[in-house]
Image (cartoon, rainbow, N blue to C red):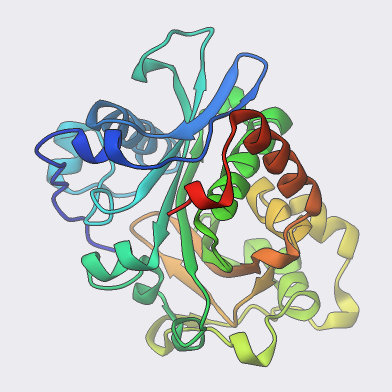
Length: 288
């Protein structure tokens, strides 16, 4: 996908004025939304380091010069960040990030990011409130259970706060050879397909079948072990997968489409958020 110039707001007033869900904490780690442009740029720097320098994505000339990953969605979305406060109190302490795009933000950008890879007509026809998740990345030392738990708590709090009904997005396997992920892709295709009312299919010009192996040849245990941690997380939340993979040659990945109805999200995340919100004095009337 092509990158677009990032045009941050003239001031940080929009961040300051927004009603935000409360931060989530776990030891010296904290998850919250970005509050200013410095934090967004630091998140883009982290994305560049992981996507381009570590995973071999191909940067534009501007992205290479500025060493940050950016596109047209960055100035309309919310950025969920994880800070390690043992490293400091400013943007230099950001160790993980996730991009959150609600329906209104997608309209400002001309549509959801996923439409560049998948036909998501069925999702756009869904009557509930939508949330697209993407650009997830975690610094290497923090690719562990506590960081992922904190990211999921942050997402659950965001979903609860904004009364969102369906989460979706593209998640990636490393490299551009689907056969290298034959067990995992086939497992997702056969065991976790989306129901017909949420039928999503990779664009025909880039469609790659996921059923590389027949169902009877799948070693479910091996397939689960080989799944990226983020995909495992979605499965624990009751995730469904679209039809077909998409080879993203710019980002050097095999992408699959995931969707989760928020009423299927594991109850513990919402119980945790409700306790946090009660302590913070937040009520339903406080939400936008």
